[in-house]
Length: 135
Image (cartoon, rainbow, N blue to C red; front, side, top):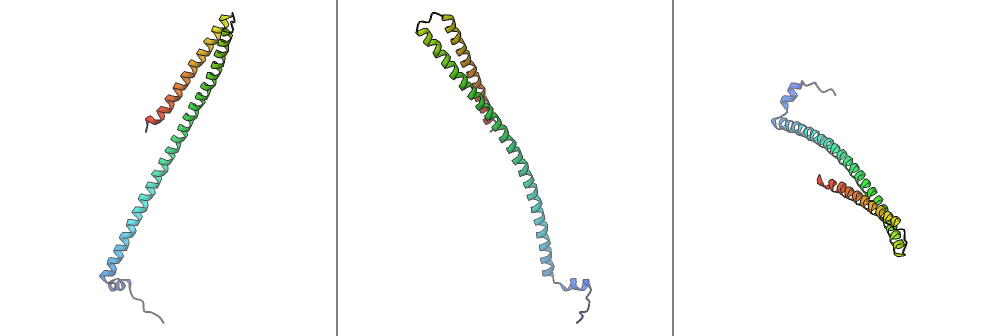
C-alpha cells in the first residue's frame, strides 16, 4: 500500500488557518520558555555570586569574633592574675610587712595589667560593633 507522495506545498495549503495559528502560538510559547530559562540561568548565576560573597563575609565575621574573644580571654587572665597579685600585696601590707617598696611595686604591676586588659576589652568591643555598622 503505497501512499502517493504529496508535495509539501500542498500539505501546507491543506492545513487550515486554525492549525497555522496553533503552530504560531506553540512557536511563541517555545520562544517565551527559552527566554524564561535564560533569565532563570542569569538569576541563578547572580545568586551563586551573592552566596559566595555572603560566605566570604561570614568567614571574615567569624575571624573577627574569634580574635575579639581571644583578646577578651587574655584580658580575663590578666585581670585574674592582677587581682591575685594585688590581694597578696594587700595581705602583706595588712600583716605589717615593713617592705613597702615591694608592695607598691606589686600593686603598680597589677594596675598596669588591668589597664592593658581594659584596652583589649575596648578594642574587642570596637571590632564587634564594626560588624553591625555595615548592616
